Length: 417
Image (cartoon, rainbow, N blue to C red; front, side, top):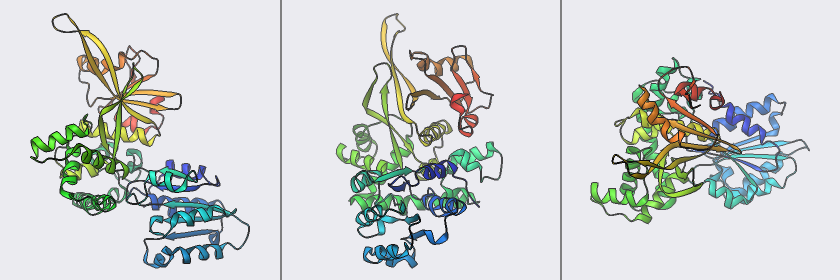
């Protein structure tokens, strides 16, 4: 079954012939190889590229094992360039290639070669690309299936699909499994045997149990403000373990670098400044998060917030957690300073949107509560409240768009209706 990934395919097509090495990154099993060897290759063929002008090597396959030696690969590829036509080199798991930086830079000097690679998040991170290619790499970061992409292969309506997506997430191999037990087991095994072992091996983590416990704490508190000091205190009071703040910080950086979680920084909207701590952490895939807590503690409101965050990231927004400082009278009539939170401040170029995730708005009082922070922002950028209920999109008297999570996620232009 073909899963449409048109959003990423069109991005990759737009990068053709730009003189850079196209590098596809993303969490393991999110569909990088499928994008390159199936969807993009099909595009090349349909565009009239001859089969002998597409050179593809998957370094993790047995038959391509010999090509991990650069002394074998480089002359092999050069020997396939038989004319002046454009050749497309597609390389999967390129970190397994010895001296891959030098080899790829060598390909770059060939005038009729266009190079595309994928890399494992264990040994080929965004910061590696910046370091190794020094302006020669063009990264395309890929995410697991969005809700819309998931529904394209889901056999059922969007409401049943939502229940499935909230529980098991959007990793393509999981979406294609049919039995709930298979999905749960796959996610648990993938997290333990691949993601955690990747990070432990890359960074030589001595205390694996300690690292896993941090992941569990983050999984239990998605969307909560936290920082390394607070997490270290949690280890001390609830786990009776002492762990340094610096170690916690390193562990968090490892998880972000491996694309397992994303860090959202707080932004003072009125003061127009960033606040370094505390921050929020969201999982790249909610199914992975649920697997870490054994599919318990499944608060749909927090999961919905995580899914909205991932959707905004996938739409190429810079996403921060908004903070609005206000002064209101307290119960005694004295002026008191308060901080109101806006879930997401979304920026892209000159555009900005403020988005609030509100699982349910059963009455006027709840609407006022969810609108309070948005209404204290004194600019004209669009303000949106996303709810789980399914009303048609509508605007409040103050001009706030209220939209269901289904309309928000399934319409790529939902923020501009």
